[in-house]
Length: 306
Image (tube, rainbow, N blue to C red; front, side):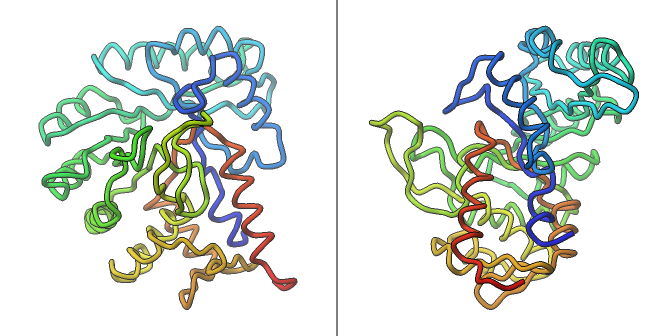
């Protein structure tokens, strides 16, 4: 696997239902179906749906889900906000209806995303969640983050951070993100990120797709995953912080067997490792925007060499 593919493999969890895109279910499902058959399908992660809309998703997706002996199931991540036991029952029934070779089409809910602000909330919610579901706990980046990360580790779960939003004050500081990554590495906790990451490189962008949208400096998904990979390879947090705050796309080059950022080289194998045990994916309301921006960046910065 080359460096680009190592970075992109399953990278983007599709959150088309959520702002700023805010697509209706029919559009989001149709898009996911198209992406799952398209040339960049290897970069497509899970379809993200809130539990209250799971029945709507199932009905809408009925004509799009893969069928047949060797059909690759759609992977689904469900946002669980309330009663975990009730959610588990609903998710398990969905999986039963869409198991392999189901005439209704194959799909699997294998991820549950929850929120927790205390150690007790993490323990209590995980207690009601079977190990058949991989869980992510969205935790705040303020307060005793280390204790929350260690609590996530104690229940063999994963962490989730919010890296942006629809207003300038929704973006956490770069140092708080690096501190979170360092705590995750120390506790051997994998994580995902969400919100404000549909651009490749850190810069000032519009926060929504409206012409009069407010603007703010947004983190690039490449910055986030580059910083995480550096930490995973043992680089110190100061170097990782520089990578997270990088705004010059010309400092990044993709080669066949490695990714180069300034004087730092990360091999494709190191990227694969970081993606599998550290920085798993990110949620984005757009799939094409981040993928196309990265392709454009690679085209502009790559000399005619491998």
